[in-house]
Length: 144
Image (cartoon, rainbow, N blue to C red; front, side, top):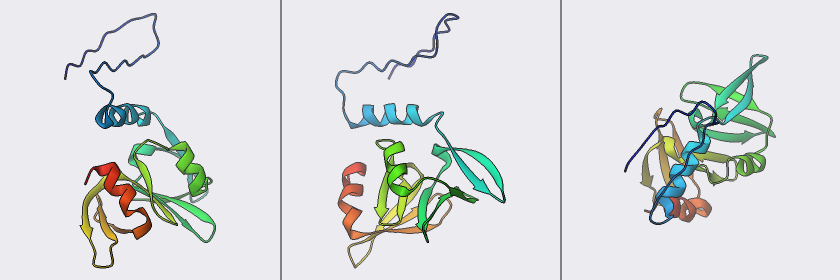
């Protein structure tokens, strides 16, 4: 892999990926680059925060409210899960249950369970259950 950075005073930032073939790795690289400056607004204690989407571990819907979880904080977000799926589509966020969307880049490990679900351990050691309905999608995305 050859990486070059060229400074050009009359140009906005432009990223060009040159490759022999567009495969899953290239698509994931593109998605990571797009995530770089993607911020979400969330509320906690009547204050508005702007969170980088790459810092989000997962989103969860509880009692018609949606929450954003980082490694050490929980905040409420205005969007519904289906809206977040549209905003973050193809950006390494995937639904793992009816009420959760997870950032697959923040998963530390996966453990198959006897009931055909998968237990995902996040980077902060929190554990989430991937329901049977979404196991195949996770396996395809992670090529496992």
